[in-house]
Length: 544
Ligand SMILES: [Zn+2]
Image (cartoon, rainbow, N blue to C red; front, side):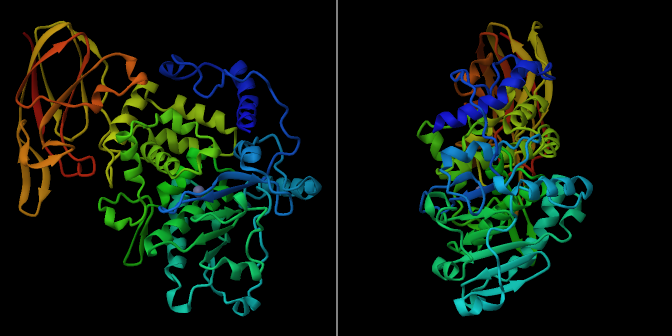
């Protein structure tokens, strides 16, 4: 079944590989096409009617791993596909192919596609039916279900009246505005958009009311422990605690928003990464903040993604960014896949040099195959593959709650070989790695640092450090404020861990043995607490 995935992938790759024009990024072109699959040379004929409704299934329960992933469905009345069989087509919606819910509904779908072209406020390239079950409000109480309505959300649940999370309505209302802004979408498109959320404790009650997907429609025949989305309907299981239940609503609703706005969800890493990225939220005093940078893990109970990535480094199983971007749908039974995907989207959306290209590429969802979309993203970002993977290693290895992907951005410079006997430069004490722009010629170099700078703002006042660091506070295993260095050689990084993940103390003075590496320097600090850093350090580099 895996072969199907690669086969379909290749089908989309082949014309691109033959006909694609020059890349705008020379660095990207130094390596083989990252999304090509050289092992597979057969080119299967794609199905004549591609799958339709992008369905996401989510397995977010911290306690249980569960079958999920993003699968395609040929429509509510069609036989249940296996994940492996239909997952790739669901992700690769070719703009030149109609995505029909059912072969027998060609006429209907063609009509709706035609309408799409004339009315910009209808859902784009409708992915099959927007509703899986028909909701009749009147008999709900008979089945032990309650409903509440607001402009954009209908909430149906079997929770007792007193336990219904009525804030869902305000949460969803505010979320629409934030998704819309991120996607650059026209708010008028969502003026009449309506989501139905089934908040489930006892699914039997929903089954009796015919408000539950059939076993044949659900992955492995059951509702995953997190939730599931189909068009404008989401099923969310009540989670442990109100935060995580809201998180799941926002996760599934993010899928629904993207499906409605773009008619596509993107590759598995992108779809699930975006859903997790937005679902990490803060809800306080009636105000919602999606994609919140939350530094206190107690504010995200049961979420646990940061630990999963840290654990991967402990067990020697970290993923490269490219591996994450190539996750097949079948990767999504594993909760870890959600964690890596969240980190990848957080990096692209947070890093100041990656964010503009990422947002521009999000605008192109639904306009090309997923493979092509991924490739274009890599070509559009102003970092080379080497720089991108280095940044990814530095961030994921030291990942924190509230990790500041903007302020950890490595400051690259054009590099030259150090051919003078002495250099002096001044760098901000902002906690990010800074290239000195110097490749130290083979031999010994003495580097000295001076400076007095702020590394934290505390209740007692500013915490000022000098290059040795402050020993009353540690960050990442070393004194906060300590000046550190790394000598990074050539692209060997793609086969291992960058030297930037192994900082060495420079403090006020260090003697370095170089064999031609580039010198990087930083002030040590927690990647979640860099906003209060101020000041700079002065470095003198002398050949010994
Ligand atoms: Zn999902």
